Length: 243
Image (cartoon, rainbow, N blue to C red; front, side):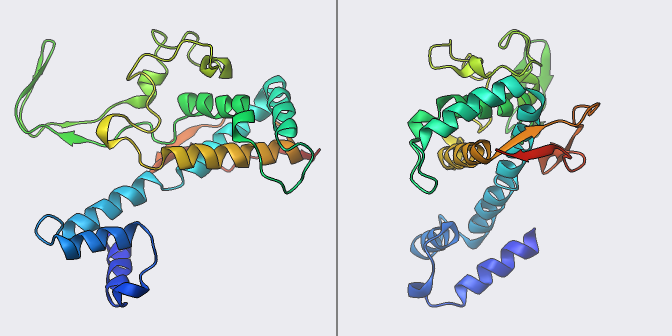
């Protein structure tokens, strides 16, 4: 990863600044040129690593898990399909009304609760000793937030292993603060969360409008593996039929 990011960084620096494309790397490099002490090149490298890791197949992994959830819950899939078909008003290539895809969005939010692409939030190192209950941790202890465990906790989500998109209905009680963190939280919440949700909602709706997914007879729930992002251990082999 270090080599990949360094090659991109050096290739960008070899270009005239007025030829730089408008992307995250250009913005970070402009900060470096304007404020070299506050934004040394190493800070640019570190920000690029964070962005690369945070976006490493997370959308694709979430859509893969949602495909399984749709295939294994045909009643939920049909309800989401009816909403997706209505959102385009019969225009195959027209613009969708995202506000009309509320239930499709709920299926994604519940998928990310049950199968988060990032089950552990990035680590933080304690700068001084920390006391939590009966435990005292020395300085330099590395802490990680076990997000998946929290999102599977029955105190916050009744029947936590059940797939229930109605948990995220606008009229339902919102999850307790800190119990649902698919994009993190606080001042360093994922900067791409709104783009990711909009992107996934549109892709999910278009798939619903075109295809029906089903699980082959006897198919077990996919086993999750954590490799940068959490994904099925093997490619999903689902049955697909044109609508």
